[in-house]
Length: 289
Image (cartoon, helix red, strand yellow):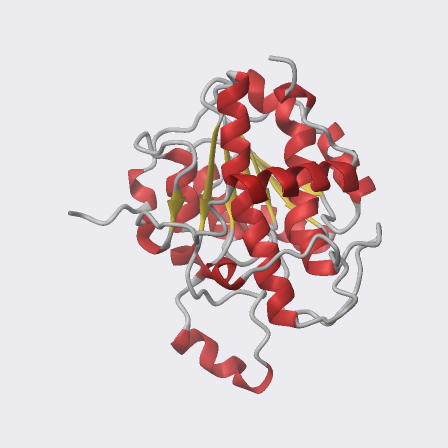
């Protein structure tokens, strides 16, 4: 069977997409290919300079592309709300941005940094944009996780990781939360009768800015695959007509099975309620249908 590539993507003219963290890493080739295939793309990034440079790079590669920059800091819920308020239509939301293995710290709202940025920021963003997605036929949400979710654990009595902080443990927890969220979003959309596809992806070991390797940096290009390859699962999940809600795709767009913990509906439901309480985003578009 021939491997799926971005060349297989359909014409996306008339579609609108938001890609978080689209200024670098796998987010950039994700935004580039969506724009190349006709979508109107918002490059959502915290740093304006890098975001606008990403837009310029896309326009150099795809003259006439419909692409713009939108400032979004997922570690600041007020920024998430401001960004969401400026979006007018949306068919594809790619929850791509992430941080990894950072020192212990907190977001502007006081959440542990990796959990707050990678999960809570995207939970809030998706909920705030959900009315637009629910109104768009064939809308999709793609959430980028990692195989690190397999080692993730969530202690609801210590979400701040005050008892013990480990960089990798915190990252794995945030990636577990990504999978739980994506699968629960599909379950809730199905129950509410909202025609939305929510999927989750694992890009594989990719040479991006999320990898902090210090003196080993020169080896990154040899040991890890390029960002464009890491974008393939997201692009497949966002555009292939063969995708079904609740699926998990890995490198080369091959189907994956989430860990047993990530597939727990009970854990997902609890995380959802806690996330709604912490962010104040209640997903009214899925309620009362």
